Image (cartoon, rainbow, N blue to C red):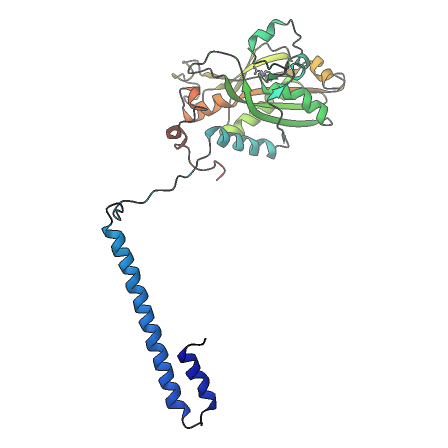
Amino acid sequence: RKGKIRQAMRLLGKMAPEERPTFGKAVNETSDAVSGAMENRRAELASERLGAALVDDLFDPTLPGKRENRGTVHPLTLLDWRLDEIFRSMGFYILDYPEVDSDFFNFEALNIPADHPARDMQDTFWLDDGHLLRTHTSAGQVRAMKNFEPPFRAIFPGRVFRYEATDASHEHTFHQVEGLYIDREVSVANLIASMKTLLSEIFGREVLVRLRPGYFPFVEPGFELDIGCLVCNGGGCPVCKKSGWVELLPCGLIHPNVIKAGGLDPEEWQGWAFGLGLSRLVMMRYQIEDIRLLLGGDIRFLEQFQGTGLE
Ligand code: PHE
């Protein structure tokens, strides 16, 4: 602001009116010439710097840039989001229960006392303080009954843990989605109808279901539910081992002892529950042959899943 051009501009005010145009024009031209020269010099300096960088052997401007790494959503999460959406639209709560839980919620409350042989069905990681890593999402059943006023319906997806040797179809950590429905006068017919509706929603088409007896201490009666093979539509193919049916999930009517453990009167309240193997469903959905790929953390595997599944 103290520069010569500014000073000259200030003089303008004190001049006689007839002198102003010529003087003003001269000052403006000078000003333009000076800024133009500065601009040119700046550009020259910049290109000199670039030139110097270009002859530096450590800088190769022809190398391609680094592509930014974009994360992808894990297939377990993709399917879990999809299920959450379906169940939420059908009035289910989506609940989240602890992975570290007590003997009580994981076993006792589910009609599996300490000396019960059914404990051998699920080899357990025990913690030093007597807690355990939940072996199934069923550990949330009695928690949910204590948390909510019946009637209610809920799913609780999550990680579960089993102390077992791993191979292509066994992993020490895997994912399940528990379904729980508590109401008055719940029957097997009701269970079948609910499962049919849910599975048709999940698979986006009409699904045939079939029940076989299955044993779990916390359901009575208990079932293994099969669905008509979606690959061959029941005609028989390698996926269903030519039977036309694929084993999908265990389920059943909740045992009265479990209803009682949840603080409810089994004369008044009944329910059904299912335990969907989310890891297995993901494997079926994306034709993944080894369960260990799911939590193995191999980027090349994970990168194959794009999008959010919610489009
Ligand atoms: N919790 C059982 C398991 O993981 C599955 C199950 C859930 C069975 C609900 C019946 C009802 O093996």
